[in-house]
Image (cartoon, rainbow over all chains, first blue to last red; front, side, top):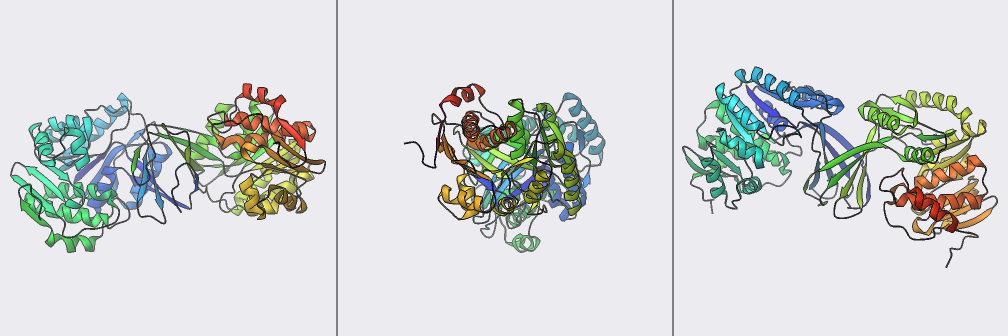
Length: 309
Length: 309
């Protein structure tokens, strides 16, 4: 199975308002909540594609209970570890008029040393059954900053491959633990390496230990720098919609490709088609499967770091 | 005692962010939650002033439990009625740079007929001990639109005076039940009566049944139209700060004045001084007591509806 780790799992709450006017008061007309956090979104995508997947991380309090109830509704295997604190919410404000969304991410509950030890024990129990481990998203306060590095090392000891989607110090430390793939987006790559050029940034992460770097470049597709070569993969058309879950869909495709031992060009083809199909879906963790199948044969995958003209 | 009714009690959550940028993602740097809803704010002010006060209304789920825990922390008597649904949150986004706040009010949990019957039974048990009943704020979905009218009639049957702070249809219906005081702000008065002129709006509400109308006019103070006469009361100076709780502070002063049998000019003096002192306090339900004492002798209270020049 594929094990997705969401240390800062969240209840993603959506507020529908007529218009967002800063410094004024808004009556929320409609709201709904669902389990979220990057790793949960990745798990949703993998589950929909038919891959066996297990969700772990932390969940606490009533918000944590709501997260678990929603995972159960979605049919996702829940191996979250209980936490004394209250899981965080994210609030996304969506306006009827405009398509875009304004997002507020709560920092998350405090993770005590003892909580982290309990998580490590759970992870050690799960990882022998995992072909691939996905480490995604922010760390809740109190988590060791080297959390993803430690989990990457433990996964490797058990022969599991790792995909890391993080940024800043947690990503820098994880890279030194030699993960199989890291997937920053352009902004994260720049923030983590200080390099504005994705090629140069990817080279730095590879030099620091990442076996492969797949940088997601939004509408321009992905740049992959690996031991076997460098590729650019570009979607066949520009898609408009909700970009929130595109990165998580990309990670899901990378994890599935690693598990199935696909060659890089095929992995990247699947990742770009799935990301574009996720943009067409209104909620992170979902994708338009007909669009995915339509895009798949037409994704432009070419060696080298240049984009198609 | 004074009984404050908050049917849509809330967990008021504050998100501190660097800057609010619509259509972008925000990392919430600091957050805190406290019990809220207009009636809860009124109760906080009364409690601080030393008036015996009891809080009733609905509280449900984990959010309701957090509301109750915060009331206990504040030392407020909690007579909230349990609800199967989850109490609402309000989210206030505060920017470090600017002083203003952007507010999102969730609609609140569904109140079933059976819930409303249980509330009426609780209210009937509490009201014999109440000198004044305060009916404040929005109605959660499912509540009868005539809720405030019904509660006003029941209060009158038990000899309790009533202060209603509502708007729209719930206010219109309540007015017909002859409450002692209604306290709309200028916008609510206009929205409820269709009259842009506060005098004309107040006259309409009086004709419809309200014994007294105290319209809060922001920095311009209040206009009171009563059986004993009409007054304007104006704060001695312009205050800058957080206007959120000023209306609730005004209601608290009106309830306290009714309970103590003060003459209208004294009630209005207290209401304007307390409202202005609430603007100086960063959170609704609090006020700057030194400012209140300083303002009190200098509030301009004059008969008639004209404002001081």
